[in-house]
Length: 460
Image 1 (cartoon, helix red, strand yellow):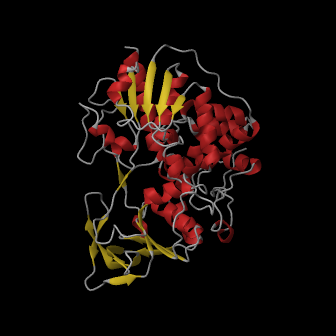
Image 2 (cartoon, rainbow, N blue to C red):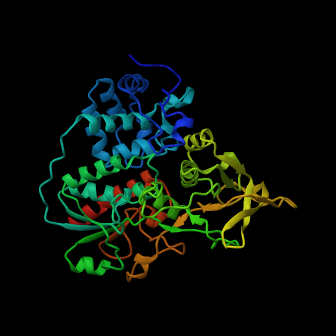
Image 3 (cartoon, rainbow, N blue to C red):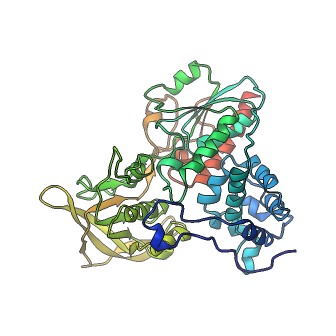
């Protein structure tokens, strides 16, 4: 019987007072009873508007119907037909602006908790099933995938399911890309990522780590080695800075470095071989999910005060509402409508403060958001000993600088057509390497599109 409640079942989570002192997952997930109640809210619409909002086109009403029938493995099978990373997507995708934003139930109440149900199904499968996918029969074609982030893994998984011999080349010592170096353990446990990657390996996907394409091997050499097509999914790992005085001081980090050292190198551990300085007062510049991650990590490292410094108002914060709420609960201080103008040092070259100015919102800019304008005579100093810049990233220039005939945009992104095809025959690209920093699910959608395009290219 349908559940006509207007309210989405809340997500159980650790209390803020406990979780701000540990790296355990904050959101605890639905239990079976809660999942069944939430699944019963789905109207199983015939025109399925939610599916059109999903970049990888998961058959959402179909998998939710399986939940109502208590066929959780059937639900997992439906999700995995479209997504190679269901447990990841259920945790980090911005469903509220994608599938859930188009849910019919959202017109007169909360939308169905699609992401929470996807996580329940994936976690149930991981906890109760020992089965592994069967390796498909080889079709005799070889494809190289550069980068093992969400885009590369999705492309590799979709091609492997079609019988391709796929090798993924990863620059770091651990596969997973931004899933392991960028997103904190308390949002995405690394065992979850490892499990998803093991599933891909069972399909025949090979992963070579410590392979910096453009240094160890070039794309031309990969093609000479017998790879008939190449997919570039190298992400956007080049951090941006503001260009203000003091950004080279000790105690100033890019969010990329800060999060990589914590998430991948485990710098928060007392026995870490790559420790990170324990700051008392931290300013994180930026307002996206990365800024929230960095601020919450700084709090867990023991900082007494952590500030989010963002030049627009809360309404314009690009971070997910859930991440902003969690940050506030954990004691992060939001200094909105403020912008730094310099970072100031003590007599030893360490950060001692950050000079900021107050802002006010003027007319809309090209993005449609109101442009922040400096308030006159509003300068003040923020007492901090660490500054983390989380204002975005750009694609790494290594691939474009070592590959002839690869057309790129001014900001560094590789130019492709709508199917992921680049200016080089047989070379495809997608995700942040093309668009600049975006979301996990959009990168996955690009990987999926390119896999289909590569399949058509090699079978024309």
